[in-house]
Length: 194
Image (cartoon, rainbow, N blue to C red; front, side, top):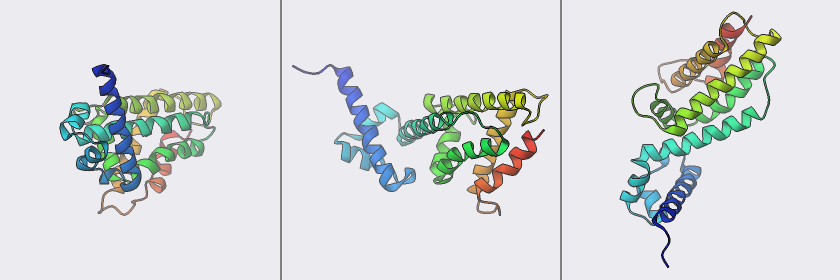
């Protein structure tokens, strides 16, 4: 008795993701090669391309899933009580993205913010983080720990811009301030202080 084609397809996709994650654990996102994934998974290149389009599509699924897991983690910490606490929660994302330029490139490209290429999980992670930060800012406005008079969503979108900025300059060889964790707090304090 043969298995249904859909079940086989889902099993193959899961295997490709598992193998790719193992390779990323060993070599980082920049070290992921299609040839290595298909060899370990025991499938043809065309199979990987059928599931993910290309290597970047596979990376988008892996990276988007990691970001969603981080969002679960920081959401579980509860609402920040200060700008410092908010900044510390964002450092989870900064630490992840800053370790590999490929992560930054994939997130930026597949978020939908820079062009027509999108990945559902990556785009959803941006929206979810913005929604989470919007909620935190709203609570912090009520508590008087951040500026009022501006919509919390507007302030959260500004934070997204600052995150992108400090991460981008961290990969710029010409910029003196290459530590995004050092660069982010002054922006957030200037943007959010009452």
